[in-house]
Image 1 (cartoon, protein in one colour):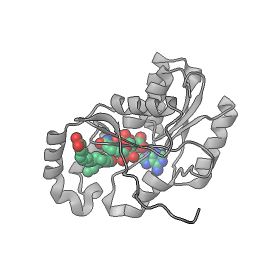
Image 2 (cartoon, helix red, strand yellow; image 1 turned 30 degrees about the vertical axis):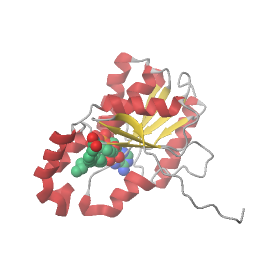
Image 3 (cartoon, protein in one colour; image 1 turned 180 degrees about the horizontal axis):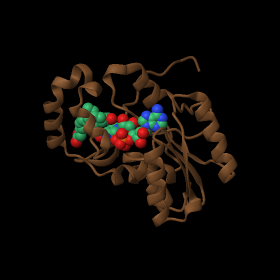
Image 4 (tube, rainbow, N blue to C red; image 1 turned 90 degrees about the horizontal axis):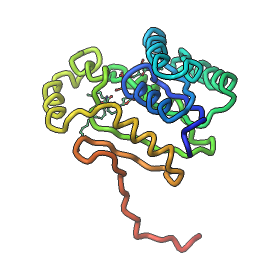
Length: 208
Ligand SMILES: NC(=O)C1=CN([C@@H]2O[C@H](COP(=O)(O)OP(=O)(O)OC[C@H]3O[C@@H](n4cnc5c(N)ncnc54)[C@H](O)[C@@H]3O)[C@@H](O)[C@H]2O)C=CC1
Ligand SMILES: CCCCCC(=O)/C=C/C=C\C/C=C\C/C=C\CCCC(=O)O
């Protein structure tokens, strides 16, 4: 799919990887709705993007993705505003070991699109240089894993920390290549953008 002229919705688009996604999509000619629960960061982000791209190509919608009513309302607003919706990027996420249920709710369940006849792909990055990495130093985020913070920092040094722009490059690859569906794209400092390969099962059922 060509990105130019399409409409995209990016959750958690106010900062970090989401913001890099918004920037890359705008750079490729899309119109973008950035959704985020953080209104201040969302508005700041839109204002900064408006310096680089025409203001009418971006809209900020405050939305907590765990609130299904807000989320549905936001999808509706995007379609009303731009007249269509072609690309959804389910990016919003938190690091909160103390409230595991809410972490699952935000990171995995909020925008489940599998029943809508769309291509569905996943990006799994290694460490990326965004504000979320500051949570490693906070007991309120790390909970029982707080004592591992130095090991995690050692891992970051060992494996490397990537710039968000390379994750955005992975997103554009997924959008532009219509053959990609059900793929797990891995992005690491050592191997760059690559795909998880699954071995074929040798078993073939006689019942077809
Ligand atoms: N930074 C990293 O090293 C890696 C990050 N990830 C994942 O990538 C995604 C983006 O992470 P980063 O940009 O690094 O984090 P970030 O903390 O910099 O940005 C996350 C954005 O999501 C928003 N958000 C959080 N909860 C929300 C909610 N309930 N509703 C709406 N917006 C919400 C935040 O306000 C923030 O703007 C997350 O799902 C994270 O788990 C995955 C691998 C590595
Ligand atoms: C403590 C987690 C900080 C929050 C970051 C986050 O939200 C999600 C991170 C998910 C994955 C990155 C973490 C670990 C990656 C570990 C190894 C990468 C291997 C890279 C390689 O070159 O093989």
